[in-house]
Structures are given as C-alpha cells and as structure tokens.
Length: 110
Image (cartoon, one colour):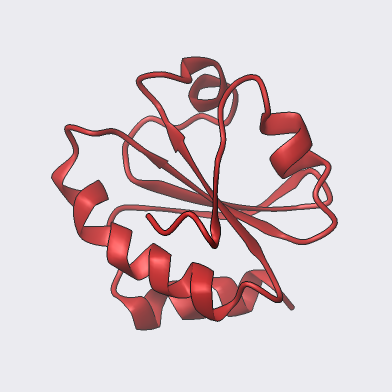
C-alpha cells in the first residue's frame, strides 16, 4: 500500500493512530495469506489517495496484531472498519469494488 496515504497500525499505536485521530479512519484488517485482501489492496490505496483530505487510512495485519482483531471482533479478512472519534461507525467484510467502497465511505462520513 502506498506509504504516502496509509498508516501501519498495530497493537502498540492503535490508540494514537486510530482512536485519537481528529479525522475519521478507515482501517483495513488483513493477512498476508489472504487472496481477497490482496485484491482489495489497490481499491483501498486509491481511496486513501483520493480522500486523504477527509479520512485517514490504516492497515492492521491480524496475524501480527491479534489483540486489535479480537477487540474489534474481526473474524474474517479483509474487514474494513470506519472509526470516528474513537468509535466504530460502520464495517464491511470482504473485498469490495471501488464504487461500493466509496458508497460505504460516503455513508460513514455523513
């Protein structure tokens, strides 16, 4: 994922990078072995670049950061969760085409 618009999120920095963010944050929970995670990566990268003035985008590797995955009930990957002011606003599980991801974001950013 493009480093310019994405934040590597982990168990240690989750509170700072996601929960304390002034902007809404889209977090992609993923795993390196997950084919659907790889297919949604370009979509998330594109959204991260396009909406960088309105949202932050981060990614959490569930294999390396199990505490966050467990805390937010991530049972399948990819799972995309939008946080605003430290709270979960919405979530979607699975790979999405760009139009559906943008619609998901639009609902959450209202």
